[in-house]
Image (cartoon, rainbow, N blue to C red; front, side, top):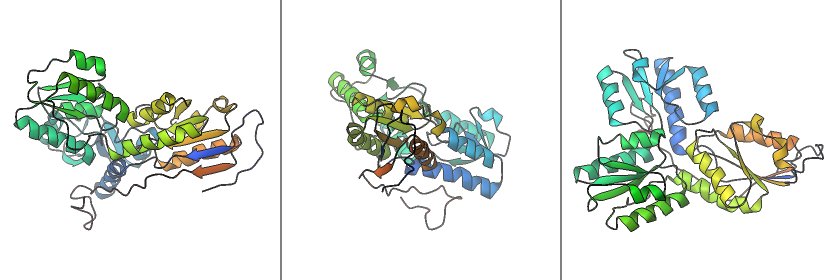
Length: 329
């Protein structure tokens, strides 16, 4: 698509073309998580309590706060009898058990692709496996997956960690990964795991989610075609950070912005072609606001690159979903 913009702009800045990554922005898991909170508010009334940010995006969290969501980290902050939503990142067994013990009405917005990892861990644990998890320490998804077991799961963040990790069952060892990693980084770390533990069991399908893969693949195509790349995403968003890092690794200067107000005109000095993408938790509204700001800096053409069309949809939990969607994969 091509949009015409006013040719008047500050001559100091040379932006003329904006190339939009495809796909970008919301994935099916994020769409589902947000809809769960919104439907719970409509059905049960405000407030609805949400453990951790439902997705890692400032705009989305603030929008849901305005509608009646209260975000908490400690379940002790949730009053008795309240409705509680688990975030898209998933939670540990201990958090689930505590929520049950406190008697909350719970709706689980964990991304089904994260749940798939949890199910794999539970299944293989029963078969006597230990686990190496590739991921970022402190990320809520990693805490949730590691928290599926009380022991026997070891986190590695890089190749150096693989060298030093100590497992007790190298003959019964499986590997899982955080779903929002750099596919290239994860592959490098997995190769190191396989070198050290040749019998390690890999997932039947890689754990990195389709949306993370697709957005990274789009940046690999986009980055060489532009002078600078802007990623719309919040600082806490793992998959958004990976997009910025990927572009820089490919030699293209890249910046991540929470909103259009974060853009700095000097980023675009001498850069005529600007690439634009968004992490899986960033709404399209924010992308469009960035486009308007880039127009003000001189952009006269906005084009969408060819890319994968995503048609994945995930069902809502029982009690919130449309009858026609419940049970649909």
